Structures are given as C-alpha cells and as structure tokens.
Image (cartoon, rainbow, N blue to C red; front, side, top):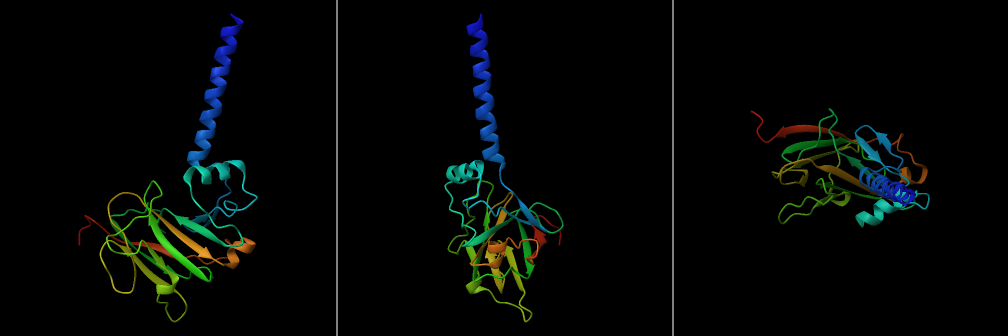
Length: 194
C-alpha cells in the first residue's frame, strides 16, 4: 500500500513540475517586463542577469537577443487605442523613436515568425527612413503599397510589431521609462465600410 501511495505522489509531483515549467516557458514567466505606452521590453532577457526561465525560453525558441550593451528589443501587440494588432488592418506608427545608431521594425505572426510579403524586405530599417523636420517619423504598415515609409504585411490574424534598437542609450541605463516611443494608430481594416 505504501508503494502505491509513493507511486501516486511521485507521478503527481512529476506532472506538476513539468507542467509548471512548461507554463513558465510558454507564458513568459520569470521575465521582468517594462512598459512604455503600448510598447514593452524585457531588458534582462539577453543579459547574464537573466533568470533560468528567461534563458530556457531563449533556448527553446532558438532566438538570439541582443545583450544590454548591444541594444534593446521592444514589442507591441496592440494599437494606442488598446485594440489588438491585426494583419488585415493598416496602421500608422508616428512620433519619435528612441535614440539609436540603427533600428529595424518587423511584424511577426502568433508563432513569432516574421511576416513576409512577396518580393519585399520583411523589415523596415532606419537607413531607409524619411524623417520629418522635427526628427519624427511617420510609417505605414499595410498590405497595400503606400508612398513614403512603408512596411508591407500580408495575411489575416493577430500580429506583433518588433522594434529592435542597436547601440542605444536606452539599453545601457534601462531608460525605457524616459524613452519616447511612437504611437500606433489603426487606419483601416479589411471589411471596413468606406
């Protein structure tokens, strides 16, 4: 009888341990999330100070994240009005980007794969940006080509924007709260009445 009690307790412990580890990896537990408007970042993710769950998440995902000295990655999965970002909609990103030597912006699907549009670059980079007189940028994310700063997307369903900053003061001193981040405004969606 003791053996069966031990076996049941051992089995429950194994399933609870593996289940809690899986949930932590899938849901991002163990990472300190810093938020600025609709943009968020995990500044410790690529650093030696990252916890075991953060390191495990990177290993499972097979992703290379810049360390604090190299840069910072910001994510947005909703617009400035609080609506989820959708691939069938078009958006305008407007305002100041944090100071950086180089930045890139791309859109990812739910699985974290970069959304590609046939024959076009999957990322918009700072070298191709046209800035306003006051140093701000206005960039449209849409499935249809527009003049000016444009990032092409395709398909339907949720998406996440990923803004990678390289050689930025925000990464060295975690100046996320002081960094100016651009707004994200929904323009139109497929099926909207004109």
